[in-house]
Figure 1 (cartoon, one colour):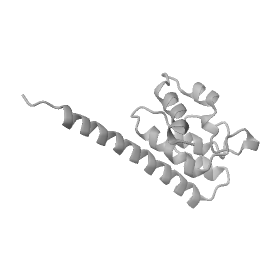
Figure 2: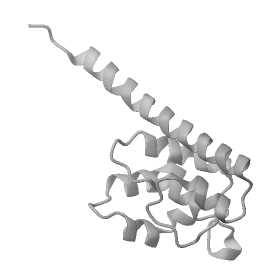
Figure 3: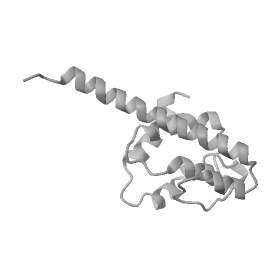
Figure 4: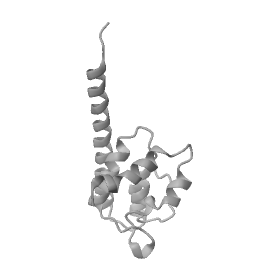
Length: 131
């Protein structure tokens, strides 16, 4: 599967979210990407989550989708979760594993933000006109 086919629905969803994104996100099924198919999720593995985290990081106003996706592994009703680590540990995930999962997602979000900043910088440098 091409990355664009995989990421395009995610990009469209993130770009089209309104002021209260959570009902649309919950209805889209994206919040349950990591949950097993037998539990109503998509059964995506962590390696598939990171391109989505990168794209979310490229958007400065994206809601806290990634921590919520992680939190829903332990609490299927979690919405707008600022920090998934306590939800994961309360749900029985070992604290070290919960911390590592959250750190990996945070790092990928930051990489997406840096990529967006680099693109803006290159665009500015190539179009800037001196007075």
